[in-house]
Length: 293
Image (tube, rainbow, N blue to C red):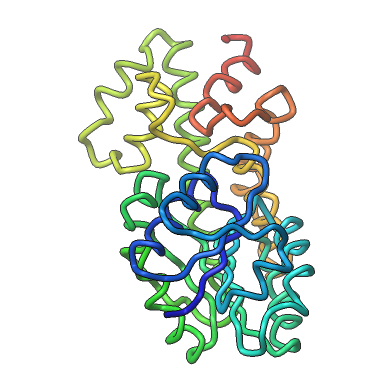
């Protein structure tokens, strides 16, 4: 069995790491700021490394679940030079493809292999091994890591070569965050016009406009279930900024995406930058901006 290192065993990573242990992979983890998930994984059979260098030396495949490209870049800088030739770095973060392409080239030049496998799904799905993975990797490297990814993902799509997984993830989040921005404005207008958000939800729910994203968003924004849609406004804005760079790199105009990005920027700049400020709460910030909150 491949020896797995895991950097970032947090909200999503903890469940993924648990699936790797269940599959029988020797797993090494490293603590950051929250010891709870690490202590739980160690209690279930994982080993804990004191440093990234130590983790690199005992791992054939290192998973990274980090907030964004700056953190991934710093982690990879440390891993390089300490992993054995032929080992794999597998980035599950939602990262900037421009950065990913550069990292992939550096990793390959160092005699290692690169995989980007950003995630689709929720922490609950991570805990049951039912995430989606959009994978960017060479064909031979994908064949090697697919059984590993299969331990924590139910749906796996090999999009193409390195960085293509991250491009696909940003396209996915473009649509998702676009829904979020539309829902937020619709809820604000429903309240302001006297229709009310509960009535709006009752009409849309079960209609052609309904979907899984709609249900978790409205469970939070309308029903007050803060556990249903745990994706922060800060992360949404980060992803939309990465997507803007992707549009620029492709030479494609982005008026709709720019408007979506600006909606999340408005929320973050007016205080929605905390770890409990989730995407459905964009509706509260839109209302506030319109003097309705």
